[in-house]
Amino acid sequence: MNSSNPTIAPTGASSCGLHPIGLTEALNLARTGYTLRDPLFDATFADRLIEEIDRLIELGIIPAVPDRMVRQHPTEWVSVLGIVSGNHLDGPLWKASPLVRRLFEDLQNLGRSYNSVRETMIAGGCVTEAEAPPIAVDGMEMNLSRVIGSQDARWSGHALHQDTHRFNPGMQALPQGSVQHNSIRARAFTVSGYARPLGSDGERRNDWGGGLPFLVRPSARNMADKSVFDIVPANHNTGALFFPHTTHGVSRMPATNSVRYSFQAFYPASEAWKTISKRLSQ
Figure 1 (cartoon, one colour):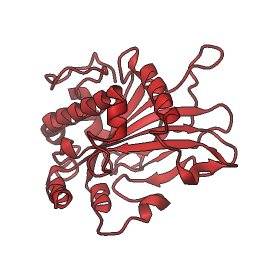
Figure 2 (cartoon, helix red, strand yellow; figure 1 turned 45 degrees about the vertical axis):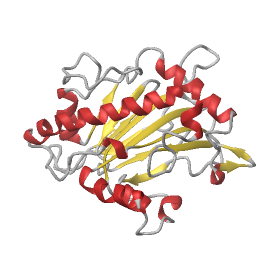
Figure 3 (tube, helix red, strand yellow; figure 1 turned 90 degrees about the vertical axis):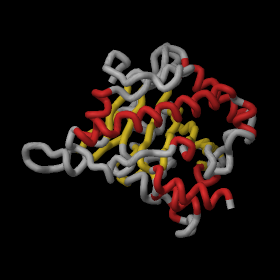
Figure 4 (tube, helix red, strand yellow; figure 1 turned 180 degrees about the horizontal axis):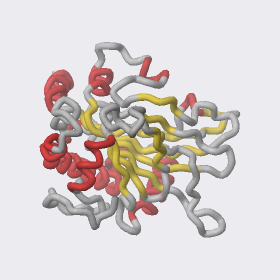
């Protein structure tokens, strides 16, 4: 899906090249539960994001994940931003990286455009109000990550799951009544974006690692009345917009020379966010 598709009126100028959700995108999202953006950013931002993530890792601001070590070498680095994570506005990453802050703000604007087109999605008849509720952009959480392939990184792919469920050991360990648990359960819209470095041959190091396998939403069937399986590649400067309740996975990184830079933004449903934000302010 590219910027030539019809779009709603902009909600604000983007410094990253992100444009509002277009009508074609909105209808595709409603029909299948996800839609692809290619390109995601302007011509230079994805490369700048790679450089910035590398810089923040070198500074120790984006940490290595302790349980993703292979023979004492990290294979994954992740930082989470947002109110629920406690890393918002005055945290070290915000102070160190105006670029990341701009990305965060542009993704909030993208969330506002979702609210503007949700009635169109519902009117199309492929998604219900319960499946596409209004979202609270101020409750958005965003992660930044770099992941590399390793022969022994058996965790580098994720089984099929929904973003509204706690699918990995770290999430499963969260207390049932915690704010973090409620925030995960409240997710109503997800955006993923990817960047890949150049190889020694000057070509993008795109590969199948880290891609998104999707099961098309149950209401979107093929002629045999079976769910459709699709894989969205995590290529350079591409992204996917999807409903968190659309079943998906993350494909494993190849063991040799595979590296993927990415972000994910999770937006909570507005109604659920009212309760969560009250708990955070207590």
